[in-house]
Image (cartoon, rainbow, N blue to C red; front, side):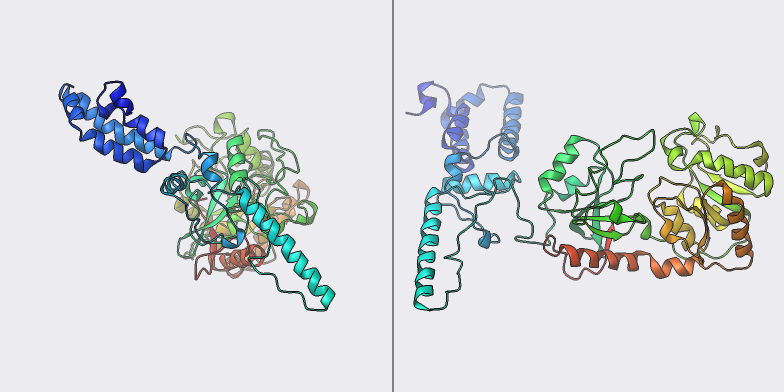
Length: 499
């Protein structure tokens, strides 16, 4: 008997029980329709306040959608999943349901975004596979005894290996279609998207820093077999733990072997990464070079790109450590006091343009300190300088290095810089190791600038930039991970995006 009739209540208040009893969305929708159009329901609604009726009509479809789409609220029943079977050889084909009820359950499962039925649960199918395998072995032994050539195994006679409950199969059913979880993943900071030259997102994510929470680590573990995750050095000493006293620490081996490939920045990667990791010497600074700019007269000897994050603490903090500010102050005593040089210290004043990081007294009247600048403003100062001063050590390949080179300005770079050293040669600038050779390096650089011996823009555009580096990244992916990711048709270039 109808439960609504037993309770003597209008049918419009009982359709939920019917839907739950039948366990599928189709039955629920049909009962909602008949319940709301019944005479008893209309009589009951006429007795309610109009606002209550409106609220009821708004709440019902909302509740239905939540019931259908909530990821873990109503998992599939074991009685339903046992009716399905999955064969790796048929991964690209859809599994057909055996009844309308199971069809509804399958629709719900796909809406929730879960992988569908990742293991063989049909006992009868396992028995069939076992029998087929035994029969095939018997036939093979018989052929060997009679001298016949063994038969070529077919899809029907090859046993189907069982799959782990939640393990995805890398390389199976590859598709260039973007993974449904991709856009949600790249909202988390460590996950950096990759695009092709047409701006299309591809199923590759670059992990550019350590995970900042257990949730981010769980996301990686959940999707690492469905999306190609590659590491990229874009934050401090990562994947190695940072010596910065203001940074969080992690085990030295936590990230160096975590990903199947890594875009690194170090001189001797074989001492850091295990042999199983595919490596490419590539940084974010290899891309997005500024266009050519007209030559202008030099107004300053050098420009330094700082950070205004620690100005309130007189440039003592995380960012100032990364910029090696303590060495900058030592170098300023030489450049201002001994050599009488002029320069610009960008982003060494607060955003209100009031408080500034302290500098040696000998630099008074010779050094310009600015607040944080827009990129065009920064480029303007660089173009008016003879060189860009790069004193950093624990900084992941500063982008200002290739930007300055593209603006035809050479570099005075710390040899100990963990990333970015690859841009320095006899055409692009000079190295120094510490204060013992700093003076000589500065003098050599100024002399070569006056004699026009450097060709920074010509060299950097021939070796880096979107075309050169984008092609290199695409080839690296195709040569090492063709079984893990399919690129959209016609893809020629790949770029780190969203940085």
